[in-house]
Image 1: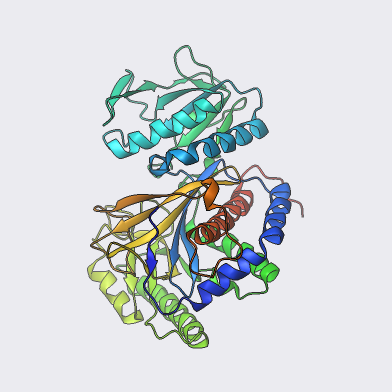
Image 2: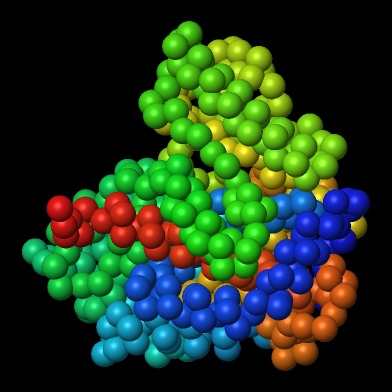
Length: 433
């Protein structure tokens, strides 16, 4: 089983965190149980974590995950059970499920992910078919997979109240499409079908800053339970609202936030004796796929944004180079290495359960850079093979199962934050004054 090694002398805080998490396992699991009595987990999600040795924190939470083909075969029974639990809560009599994917049908890795997702849902007792998100395509298409198998993508059929396919009337519609291209007309005004995740989980409504506000709230509760500093698991952030990076006022706003955040991080580094140069990440507040990332170590570097305002890396590739809304996030370096390449763990969840994960590894990227980029490789994590259950007596930092358990705990914190976030942004939620 592959486990990256931590290449830092600053493993003290993380080993201490690991020990505290393992000692508090019954209290943690009870706390989660009580939280899930009050809040509904997203149907599925994946969370990118960064382990700096002095800090372990999520840097991105994806509510339309795309890496399920990286899960080890041993994890599949767990994923099937989790999917069964999720469906049972939502629609116990569910028979047909319509899966709507991204428009990435030429990407063979994404197709393998879809196939794995369909396998899991089929084994959970559902008839699963794929719906074509592009309304202009009216013919079914057969997509070839690298292993010689095929997937069929069928055109959507919309009636007044329902969405389905020819001779297929689903009770549940599962979106694996983050709506970053804008809202889909076919999904509007469905009254008699379950749409998972809900429309407001898509990037037409969702904002990273809102998610990390919710995460901060959850991290504080969790840190109180464990009697620890929430900063050890929380990436601080600031948001700028709408910004035109080609204007002086827009740049000043970003600069001000960068400066304030770098000052806060320096203070924390000093408190923990961390002799590193802090950095922050400037990125578009909406959007996905690691778009719009810029690593900044000094507020002066924000000046470069004006020259780079035509750079599609900011503004998620918007043609005018504007980032409509900007989030500034504390940078968490990753000090995990696999075969001399920088690595970060990704935790995958269905309902409230960790169903596995993988390491994203990139040989050409630095410890402070986004690894979700061309050239990345993926190594599955063996999260819960029987012999990999947490070993409570093991020396901190020496046990892979303990590290995986810790990743699962932090991954679930981000999932709980997503649940808080979706409740707060639900357009149909009743507001009590």
